[in-house]
Structure formats: C-alpha cells, structure tokens
Length: 112
Length: 119
Image 1: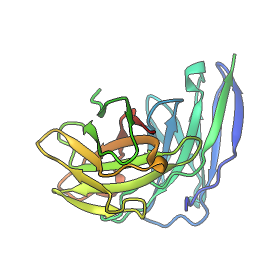
Image 2 (image 1 turned 45 degrees about the horizontal axis):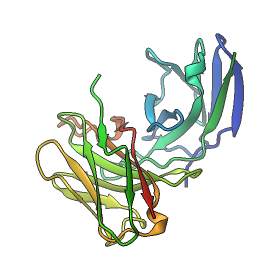
Image 3 (image 1 turned 180 degrees about the horizontal axis):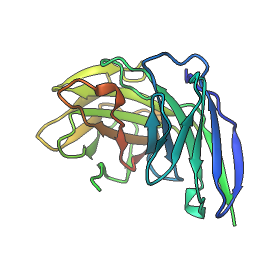
Image 4 (image 1 turned 180 degrees about the vertical axis):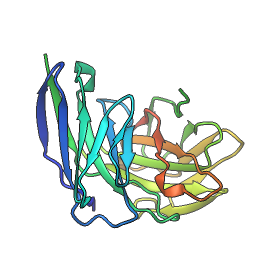
C-alpha cells in the first residue's frame, strides 16, 4: 500500500499557485519524497523529489516539513495544462527495492 | 529531452493470443520497469529488470508474462496467452544508476504507454 495520504481532488484558478499537500507520517530516514503527475491518457511524469531540504526545479517547488512527516508540492503559476492527477510517493531507499507504489493521488483541476 | 518510447500505442488482440509490447528506454539507463493501469484504477508495478535479469516482480507478473532485452535498445513485455483481464494501459519506465550505487534517488521516467485491448 501507498505510504502517503493526499486529498482526492483540488481546484486552483489559472495563474495562481497550486499547493498540493501530502502526509507521510511513517516515512523512514532514508526514504525520499517523490512527486509524479499523470495527465489524461499519458504516462506518469516525474516532477521533483527531495529528502530533507526544500527543492526547486523548472516545474515546481517541494517543501518538506522539518519532521519530514508531510510535504507540499507548489506549482507557482498554474496553467490549464497542469490539470492532472498528482501522486506523492515515498520511495523505499533500498537498492533492491526500486518499484514505485502509486496511490490514488490528487486530481487537480485548473479553472480558467 | 530524452524520452521513453513505446510501441504500439494501441494493440487489439484476441483472447488467448500472444502479445509483445515494445519499449525503447532512455539511452544509457540501466534499470527498466513495466507497470500497468486498468481503466479507472491505480498504476500497478509489474516487474523490474537489471543486468539482464528480473530484479523484482509483483503477484500480477505470473508465468504468462515475460520480459526481455533482446538488444542494446529495446525492452519487451510478452504475454503468452492473453485474458480479458489483461486489458489495460501498460507503461514502460527506465532509470539511471550511477556506479556509486545511489540508486534509490534516481527518478523513473515513463513512456506514454500501450493500450492493450483483449477481445
């Protein structure tokens, strides 16, 4: 089972920041937090990942709380093309256990 | 940006027939994966593959399934005798792995999938 909890769905106005929360209270010290998204009819797309520190790339920012029990994915200026299901994933950190366990994710609707 | 490519995009097959789904992972990636997604359901792990052998497989990946890396660029999933319940989107993924062994923090990159329809 997925080790994360996410809201089922969220709405965000186009041009505003979309903040997607995720709870992962049982995360282990060597586990990373990954975010993927799945746009309709496409494969999962990698967005960002982090261990302890906040991370930023060209797509998004990832804020991880100090106790690492929760995180927030931030899309700074959401567009209609960001409408997708967003998956927060805790990646098991063992070399031999690389599979991704997907949950149901958050369905993000960007409203024009 | 390098991509994982999958062919065909849609495969229609009669029940009981064999089907081969093809994937070209990102060049120089060393780890390869297959996932599937039944319509309206979660993405499920099938199998991981490294160094020409299966690293891990799920309960779904029974003896009707097999994977192969026949050459330096392709990665295939074969279903020997398809069943109606095999109808799904099948996604291939690959990830990089530095020799330093920092495998756990390498993201997997996915293709856009093959829609398999069993009639």
